[in-house]
Image (cartoon, rainbow, N blue to C red; front, side, top):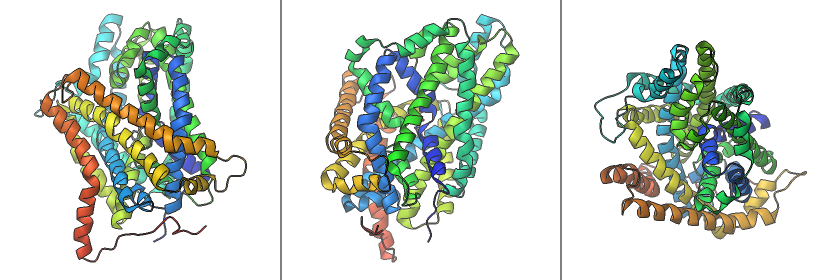
Length: 515
Ligand code: PHE
């Protein structure tokens, strides 16, 4: 069967940028910058981007391109055991897509509720109403119990979320290529509009100073380093099966070394643009100190409060709310479908299933699992799962991928693949080798251990420092981690049974496609 291909170089770059640029850029990055002394965080972020992020991103894209398979099939060519690492990445993608779709549904919900801002007149009253709008509509209990209640508006938006996600990926790279032109350019346009409003607010300068003038004392706080490295990973969409899949649809003539840099730098610039919007707007509305709030509350609780004070005319504020949530919709959709595309590519490649059917079935299953997050207990569970996946399985996948390539494979073969076709710029050996062989595994291992230690230190043996119960941490955290780690064995079992019915595993090796 002919494999899909991206229709052009720019289509691939846009799709990868669309995946990388997501809600993480809009609220996680500004929130972390605020927490960690502005410019000091930016600097460490940049260092981590160049030392760890870019080499790993280039590795994932180039390996996918070489083998033309999703992540498990690609890693299998290094060593059959390495396929397990691929399934951990796929599990990351599966779990994240289920709850990312719910966050996307909240964004859609707020977009529809934007008109309400036209009614929030009196400052104090309006602010209270604005900040409770999301919390009351999603009907959260704030705890891990309360499955009985379900928010119908959220459920409706979740149907819309999955419907639009399926629509964008129904024909694989062909339909993705068509939508990314809009889903990448529109959020940038919206952010520029919001930045102009932010800039022109009295007091905005104070916010920008806080963002760009480094507070060097923050560098001595180790959580800054941990957060910056984690954010680089999350933001580049690595270790989630996505970039292998997107690479697998590349033509072998593409230029991975240069494209990777374009993708990573665009992602970073859009993060900085979002931070400019947040810092100037928050300073302009006198809420700069609220910026340290965690990501989700920034978008759904803090920013709505700021909207009420954007201008003195409520109707105009409602229009800004509309622009803001539309921006978030366009930011989130291409990240959501990229992660679904990553997992369906892996599954359909492995089991030789038709891609379109696999996509429909996966979207439906993930929608149904996601309904759980629309209940009163949903927000708390989402918090737990998100926390555990980001702190452990994503980091673990990065470590294992780097070790597999750096220690158990000829690293030079991957670097050759990255530098194939490039005449103007080649990724130097002194950049790629130390990064993949030493820096990435060592730094990520420290990060992994750091996360475990702080979990146990703060919350006892099960790490309930988040205030949730032991049982919920075990189910939402440890069980999910165990499922990810053992997913390769589950696949092996399925393959074992299928083989009895005549199924043959794909056993291509690195040289399957001759140059
Ligand atoms: N890079 C994305 C972001 O910053 C992370 C992500 C990608 C999350 C794909 C989910 C799906 O938001």
